[in-house]
Image 1 (cartoon, rainbow over the protein chains, first blue to last red):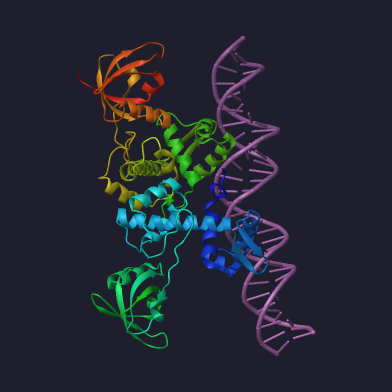
Image 2: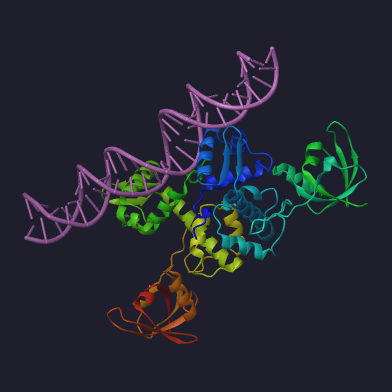
Length: 225
Length: 225
DNA sequence: TTCTGAGTTTAGGCTCGCCTAACTTATGAC
DNA sequence: GTCATAAGTTAGGCGAGCCTAAACTCAGAA
């Protein structure tokens, strides 16, 4: 068996990850979006798209954008599993904080073997989410669906549990950790000012006023109050 | 500060490691040796040697061979530290056996950050040797000197402690582990047949007869008997 | 319906790191 | 001292992956 994933370069893996993130079943990813995401010139992306669609990793409709094929999605999910498990391992086993793991994982995800990834998973007891609350795809590529609502879309008075944090900015992450606004925390929305105004949120420890941008990064599961 | 080591490719790191291994203060590494070691065509090595000597990482005397400059040696030792610490970590923390860690470390050594390497070192209590008994260079690049003699060069009746194992062949390593011939083991040479004949060696548990090739891979520190 | 501009693709060029083929150098046998 | 040969180097080529500049497409405004 010679799986496609055996011969992929680091670059290709990054393209597929980016396209996975930027596209959906109903919306293809555009050349310029991908270029932006990877910090490359659009022309470079066009070239790579051509190669990858010839390899059967994505579908390309000229001037319209790209979607992953099942094979391409398989690769992307494999990278996502690696990335999130590596982040989890670095935090749990080597004392990294959640605002510093991203770059390290970004490099390691291309270098680790499947064996090592699964050993890390076992050592952690096969976690289902990473330190930011993002779900870890299973080895066969399934991702649990969850219903989440941004803190900015909740109604005042409602309670919820923080599920995921949608930023990777170290400053944001450190600030959120300082306030106790981390995955698993129980919160109640107290006030929401209009026009992207600040949000007042109560944790089990304290009450904080946070900016709209920060609140929008917090994805929550609402609870009966 | 922009250290040279910030911009090196995986390939360059491998060349420097190979040259470190193949050369000494008195003997330069030859083009064909390096090519052999890296499984490349000699012409490719010639090309890379040119680039690396222009970068100040090695000294090249045409048709004579290459030596590392202090800067080149610094890079090589940094890679060696990484490699050996990664091997140590994988064995100690993730249950790898000493015959399977090499390939994994070979890829990871190019991807880890200095920070991660030092965290692994700390987690292990800053070991001085790796699972094969090879010394781990310190962060500043110093390598402890040790006096070692191959089992094939010892006199019958003499006792010793196994320091290092000079092979990476998984089959050899597994076999040695089965016999208890691992770093730290106390042994006594019982018999040595001439003409590269078999060696009889006694451990604390048993007595084994091993082939010359295997015995030559065992580097020992002799002890008073 | 035509035109314009944003977005996309093509054309051509570059470096890295490898290759093979052809040439050059050093060395040791005679 | 000459010369055959092994070792090393140069020349030229290729794919990956990036770039800039130029050409093309599509969609929305006039």
